Amino acid sequence: MMTLPQEFVKRMEFQLQDEAEAFFASLERPSPTSIRLHHLKGRSSFDLSEKVPWCDAGYYLASRPFFHLDPHWHGGAYYVQEASSMILDHVLTQISLEKKSRTWLDLCAAPGGKTGILASHLGPGDVLVANEVVGQRRSILKENLSKAGYINTFVTGESSASFHEPFADIILIDAPCAGEGMMRKEPEAIRQWTPSLVDSCSKMQKQIVNDAAKCLKKDGCLIYSTCSYSMDENIHNIKHFINEHKLESVPVSFPGEWGITHIHEDGAIGFQLYPHKIKGEGLFIAVLKQITEPEKYAYKKSRKPNNSFEPVPSIVAEKMDGGSNYLVRKNSPTFELITSAALEKANEVVMHLPRASLVVDAGELKGKDFVPSHTMAMACIQSNDYEIIDLDLTHALDYLERSTNSLPPVTTPGWYLVRYDATILGWLKSTQQGWKNHYPMNWRLRNRKVSS
Image (cartoon, rainbow, N blue to C red; front, side, top):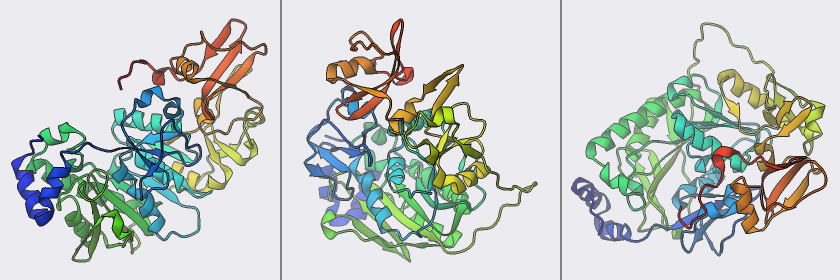
C-alpha cells in the first residue's frame, strides 16, 4: 500500500473532487512500460501490438523486458520513454509553423526523450539545440542523442540566463519540478515531496521561463511541461507567463477518448494527463506564443554572423553516403557534420552559442588513416562501400561487450560495420593482429545477467 504525504492527499482531494478516489487507486496499479521507435531506423525485439494513441511511434509493452540485452536498444533503434511524455508528439502536429528553416531549443533536455521527439519533427533546414546545464546529465543526454544519430542537433550546457537574444522559433521547457506525476513509478518522488518543494519549484520555473522568453522570436512557440499535478507549477505559472512576458495561450485539440483533462483559467490554457484517465503517468503541458518583439540584448561588442562551416574534405566525403550534401565545422578535428540545407540556422546557433557541439561527426584523420566515428554509423550516413557483418543475438552481445573472440574471420583488412537484425551497432577493424572492436568503451555492455 502506497503511503502518500497527507498534505499531497488533501490537495489532490480538493483538486479532483469526485475523481480523487479513482486517482489514488490508479497509483496502486503497476506503471506501464512503453517505448518510442526511432523515426528513421525504428526496430525492436518486442510485440508492438498496442500503440500509444498520441504518438505514431509509441508502443506499450506487456511487461518490462531487460532492455540492456536487446541490441536494438544499444543501436538507438528505440528509446524507452514514459507514454505520457510522448504527448509532445501530438502537440507538435497541432502547432501551426511557417514553412521555413527554424531553430528549435530544448532548454532542459536530459535525458533526451523529448529531444528525440523534437528531432523527428525537424525540417530539412532546421537545427535543434539540446541544452542541459548539469554536467552528469549532459553526458547521459549526449549518449542518448549519439546512439540515435540525430543530424543537425547541437548539445550545449548553458544556464537559462545565458540565452539573451531572440534566435529560437520553438522552445521546449520540460521544467524541473516536484515530480508528483512520477510517484507511482519512482518512490523517491514520494520521499522528497513537501509543500516547500512545490513552492521552490514554482519559483525556479518562473525564473527559467523569464530567461527563456528573451530568446523566443516573435510568433515563436514555447512549450512548457512538468510531471506534476500542482496548480502552482502548472496553470498558475501559465497565467504568470502570459501576464509577465506578453505571451498568449495556444489551444490544442485532443480526441475525447484519450482522456486528457483541459484546464482553462483566466485566458490560460493547459492540459493535464492523470493516471486514472490515461495509460501513463502524470504530466502537464501547455503551448504559448510570443506575440511581441522581444527586447534586444545589448552586447558590448557587435557580433556579426560568420560562416562556421565548409565543404567536407574529399578524403572524408568518400567515406560517406552523399558526402557532398553535408558540411563540416571549421577547425573541428572530428569533422562535426550538418546538412548543407541547415547552414543558415547552424551559423546562427554557433554565433549565439559558440561552445555548442554537434552530435554527429564523421570521424578523425590519424596519420593516413581515416577513423570513422560511432555517430556516423548511428546516423546511417556512412558509405555503402563498407562491408556489413550480420550477427545473431549471442554474437551481437559479445560485440557490445567489446569482445572479438566470437567474430567471424575475414580476409580483407579495413573497416567493417556490425549489424543485428537490420540495426547498425558500430565499427570493427580487421588488422594483421586480428579484429579490433571500436564500440565506445564507456557504453559497452557490462553485465549480461537478467537484471537491469
